[in-house]
Length: 120
Image 1 (cartoon, helix red, strand yellow):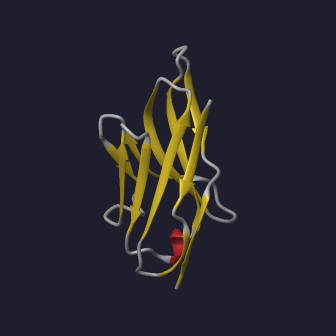
Image 2 (spheres, one colour):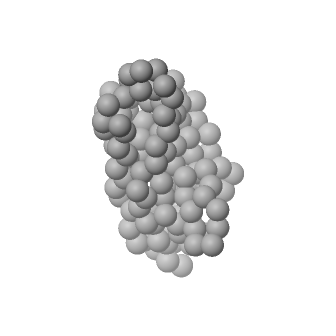
């Protein structure tokens, strides 16, 4: 019922910036939290940043001060501005959304992922 489509990944050099975007579509009542996770080869998926509908944000310690998450509730989109990228930021980045369907049941969905590669 909910589709999440990410865009904006790519290959950059260390110190450069990238902006990831995720758009939610489908049949749902609301989106409560929107988040970005990442998974590097051989590692577990980890939270990068999260933003609630009201605006409060959470960041992983590794990205604080470099990444900024934002959302547009009217457009059902969430962005991740990534500055001062490091080689250790290389991973597949996934969009994740939690909310309610029209039947008031809670849902959670993942996007398909977008590759971010930072060369040193």
